Amino acid sequence: MLPLAMVSGVEMGKVTTKVRLWSMAHQLEYVKGIRRASEIQVMEEEGLVDTGATSLVIPQEVAQKLQLPYFEKETTVAYADGRRASRKVAYGIILEILGRQGEFDAIVEPDGKILLGQIVLERLDLIPDPKKGVLGPRPESPDTPLIELFEEREEWRRGR
Image (tube, rainbow, N blue to C red):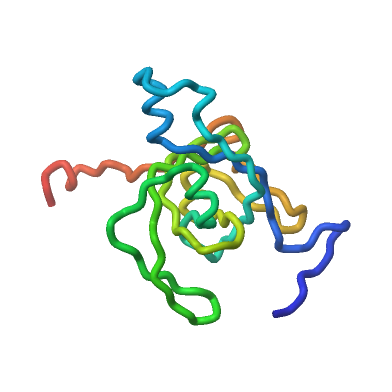
């Protein structure tokens, strides 16, 4: 693998950001009065933006600490080097980046880093700046995520 270029002391192309993660199930228990806020395990970690990845990826240790549930069946993942493997998929993860929150599923790796793939970036409406090594909101939506929906067309209403 080629080394990343350096720009002003930052590795060109490498974008990391602080992320907060917690369990949707635990938050719902709090809303229902079953769990106290202090009992919700919130993790603050460094996440690596991976524009080549589709999904959120978390290490098994994170999934265990957050007591996340898993889908019954595993999924096959393909790595950049051509390898394939079966991995568990955790669900009900609330992820917060730069004050923006969303609920996600995540591929669970035996170890490694938290990877933020395209689904996370799209849902939270964030874009990486590889030259500066930072992640930020799109200029069109500086305060809140902008989710673009399909334009409704007359032929769709008529069932064509």
